[in-house]
Amino acid sequence: MAIRITGMNSGIDTESIIADLVSAKSVKKTNLEKAQTKLSWKMDAWKTLNSKLYSTYSSTISNMRFSSTYTKKKTTVSNDSIASVMASADATNGVQTLQVKSLAKSGYLTGAQLSGVKSTDTLADAAGIGEDEAVNFKIKLGDGTEKNVELTGSSKISDVVARLKEAGVNASFDEKNQRFFVSAKEMGMDAEFALTAQDADGNTTDSGLKVLSSLGLLTAEADENASANGQVSADFRAQLDRLGLTLSTEKADGAATRIKAQDAEILLNGAAFKSTSNTFNINGLTITAKKESDEEVTMTTADDYDGIYDTIKKFLKEYNELVNEMDKLYNADSAKGYEPLTSEEKEAMSEKEIEDWEEKIKASLLRRDATLGSLSNTMQMAMSAGVEIDGKKYYLSDFGIGTLGYFTSADNEKHAYHIDGDKDDDATSGKTDKLKAMIASDPEVVVQFFQKISNDLYSSLTDKMSATEMRSVYKAYNDKQMKKEYDAYTKDIKAQEERVTEFEDKWYKKFGAMETALAKLNSKTSAISGLLGM
Image (cartoon, rainbow, N blue to C red; front, side, top):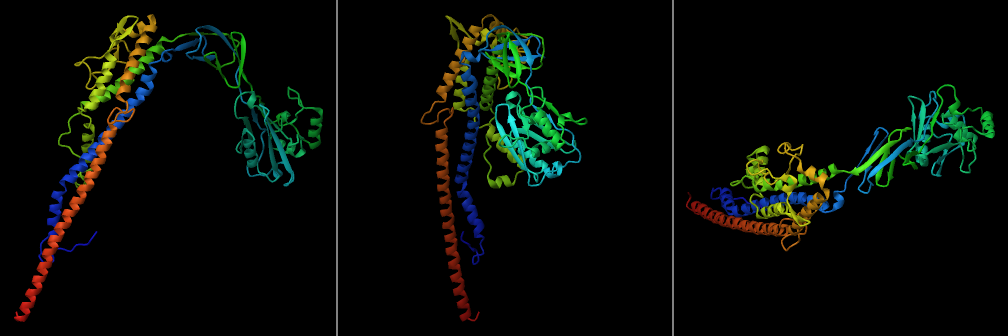
């Protein structure tokens, strides 16, 4: 920016004069900026509303068109402390028997209690082996996977924990309680593990046995020839005797304990099913076993009429929230006299005053908006129209569903629907629940009605959100047109800025010329005065 020094000869405050002249000329630019700001806020308001509309349109309203949305099943269990059951729409109605034979468990190995061991101790210190001596373990998982764990005498206790984790089990050393804890990562036999003192070739090594013993983790599983009940082979026992070792589980005090992994097993109608978890998915039923028991419980699966009712109630709730929001925006108080603030105006106000001022404008942006009014009317017409089923016309009122009326309903809730007898609705909870009665007596008619009315609503909104020259697809407002208007404002503001700059430069040139003339005049006057001796 050029540095201007003015008024030196005339003594006139030309800066202030020009600033006032420019300020008057800038009014049009300021008005354009305010109009663009309001348009930007209006675009944001429509984006927010359109997002809510599309969410409801593409999920709830869309889903309500299909019979599968209303197909609900419910299964009750005669003793839910033994098992819980959830039924899908594919479950078969009827009574079945269930017995929980076993629950799934994870394998756990709690090491024997040690004394004075620290995580920073080396295996050489703990087991009395050489620092360079190789130490090999093998983790065998129930799914047949084998992982080698390779260490040396210089490895630390913390290294053992890290290598065991890498091999596929959970592991930790509790220094306070002086015990190792090793467990399977999942429940069931597939995740079961065995910790052996074998090298990569499958040979049981002396160093491995010594280290497992020193860590309190030496169990019968270290012998691959041990019997199913945990009895080690004679050769393995001889190897232990030669090394002066005892199984950690056979120690007198603070011995190691081992819990074997187990699959869950149930009998469903006499047929056995197994699972690595306590959850079974069988023929449309999700069965969760809770407790082993000799008791045979019964499971009764039937159509869930409450589920149909809740589906309709959820649909109406989302519709009401949407239409109430539209009414609130359409009926908003006028913000006449309120315009976006300039930077100078904001400087004279507090943050709270600025926030309140702008919120007043933003709340009124869609007031009496023609597009919004048309959209709201479209939704209301689709919901209030009749639906023909088997030659008979049905309306929402035939199912005990209606609005509260102009004088009864709260502000901006005059188009919201209420279900007679809805215990969660204070306005209609005392009335007879006609919807539940009709679902129980003729669920097919109820489902067909809501399928058709939802389809009509979905089709109407599809038309409202179809792409045109002025709007994009899935937009209920003219987003393209608004973007063009916004860009036009940007162009006009830039042009106005250039005009103001030209206007300012013009006046600086005029005042500059005046100052130059006065300077010459003063120079001549001084010269004459000098000649005359004045």
